[in-house]
Amino acid sequence: MSEHVAVPMRAKFFTPGTLVVFAVAAIGICIYLARLVLGIGAVTNLTDQYPWGIWIAIDVASGVALAAGGFTSAALVYIFGNERYHALIRPALLTALLGYTFVVIGLLADLGRYYNVWHPMLPMMWQGNSVLFEVGMCVMVYLSVLYIEFVPIVVERFLGHVALPGPLGRLNRFSETLLRLADRTLNRFMGVFIVAGVVLSCLHQSSLGALMLIAPTKMHPLWYTPVMPALFLMSAMAVGFPMIIFESILASRSFKLAPERELLQGLGRIAPVLLGFYAIAKISDITIREAWPYVLESSPQALSFMAELGLGVLLPIALFLMPKVRKSIPGLFAAATLAVLGVALNRINVFLVAYNPPFADRTYVPSVFEVLLTAGLIATLVLVYRAAVIIFPVITPGEPLVTPVPARAPSQEDQPWVASESPR
Image (cartoon, rainbow, N blue to C red; front, top):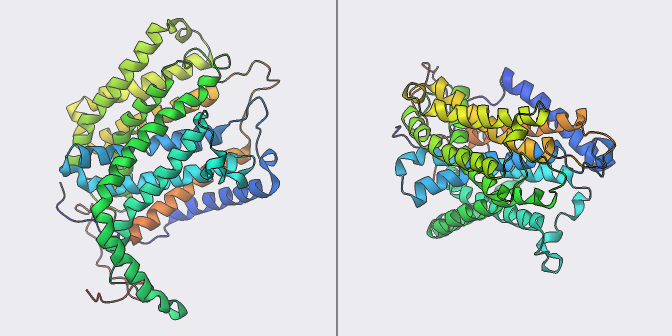
C-alpha cells in the first residue's frame, strides 16, 4: 500500500486521446442543447407507449448503480474501520460525485418539462405516494452531501494559495475566509454526512427498483418480481468495489502510475462475497417464482438474461475467487469490467428489454441522437474527471510505470488563481 498522500496529477490535460473524447463530448453537448430548445420529440424515438429509453436505462439507472463505489467505500473505511483502504476513498468519492451530477444532467434531458425540475423542492408539491418523488429527493440530497464531502479536498488544495487575477483579486481575502471557515467546521460534522450518504444511497438504490413495480403486465417474468427493490440495492452494493477497481486501474494507466495492487487485491477478495449474495438472491427469486422455463426460451429476453447472470455475475465471481486472477492487474480489471457491465446490463434489461407494453404499435429503438447524447455525457464526465484529478489532490500516486521526465512545477502563469507561496 502506498504511504504517499493524495496530490494533484502533474500531467497535460490535452492528449491525442482526450482530443477524441473532447470531440465526442462536443457532439453530445450540441445535441443536448438542441433537445432543450427543440423539445424531446425532436431528438428521440420515445412514444407514449415507451416513455423511457436509454437515457433512463443508461444515463440514470446505470449511472446511479455504477456510482455506488462512493457509499460502499465510505462504509468500508469510516463505518467498518478498514483504514487501509483510505487511499481509494477520494477517487471513489469523485467518481460518485461526477456520476450523480451527470445522472441529474441526463435526467433533465429526459424530462419533458425540464424547467419544472425544481418543483419537488417545494413542500406544497410533495407527493408522498410517488416512488419517483422519493428517488428524486434522495438523489438531490445525496448529491448535496457528496459535494459537501468534497469540500475538504478543495480546502486542502486552495487554502493559503488563493491569488485570483485582475479585478477578481478583491475576492482573495473573502475566499480565504470561506476556506478557513470550512476547514474549521466541516471536519467536526463530516461523520454525520458520511452516515447520511450511506443511508440515502441505500434508500434510492432500492427505490429505483420499485419504479417498475407499477407495470406487472408490461414486464417479462424474468425480471418482474416483488423483491426488485432488494435486488437493485444488492446489485449496487455488489458493483461498488468492482467499479472502484475498474476506475482505479484506468486512472493509473492514464497517468502512467502503478496501480495500488495490494488494495485492489483486497477489494478483489471482498467483491465475490457481495456478488455471491446477489447471485443467490437472484437465483432464489427465479426459483421461487418458477420462472426458469422462460430462461430456456430462444428469445432475446432469455439470451439477455443469461448474459446478465452468467457473464455479469457468475463469471466475475469465479474470476475473483482465483488467487492468480486477484494477483494480476489485467485479471482484476477483466473481472471488474464484467461485473460493471453485468449490473449495467441488468438496468438496461429491466427498463428496456423486459418492458413490453401490450398496445405499442412499434418497438422502441433509440435514435442516433439519443445514442450520441449518451456517449457525449460519458465523454464529458471523463474529461471533467481528468481535469479534477489534475487540479485537486484526489489520487494517491504509487510508483511510476516509467521513469518520468523531470517536469517543472506549475507556475503562477499556468495557474493564475493560485498563489506562488503559502502564507500559512
